[in-house]
Length: 184
Image (cartoon, rainbow, N blue to C red; front, side, top):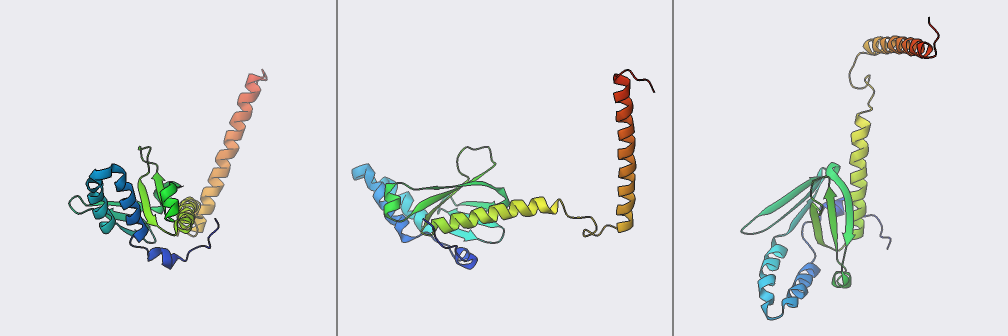
């Protein structure tokens, strides 16, 4: 399913899950039969307190009444993104976006649920994840002249490195000739 890319401001505007998520919670709690309210009560509070925040640095997710929980992830920490949905979620046009980091746990660090535009959000997260990794690696390759280092000092350093490389080359040739039995 190819969806057009979402505007960044539309993604930043997402703060709450879709009402379909509560329908999914209701349907999944009925699996317990007459004890459905045992599962429905925590899911009800989770749905009504669940908040998302997408910004320039990363994603934030928080929920809970008695035990407040908050997860903040920067785009640079994201390692992988999975899209999962079961039959009922697909029927309700929902999916879970599982965001994984390089932490020691095997599960997802954050699971975004109740989002209708899951394909576009996944694509946005992939783009931001790749962009932050590209930015991080490109800053390591910034020329020193643009970082405020004197160009004369850079030329001096380059000349010294060339001299060191020439000396190492001479040492390597001397060792090679000694191994072959040719004494200098």
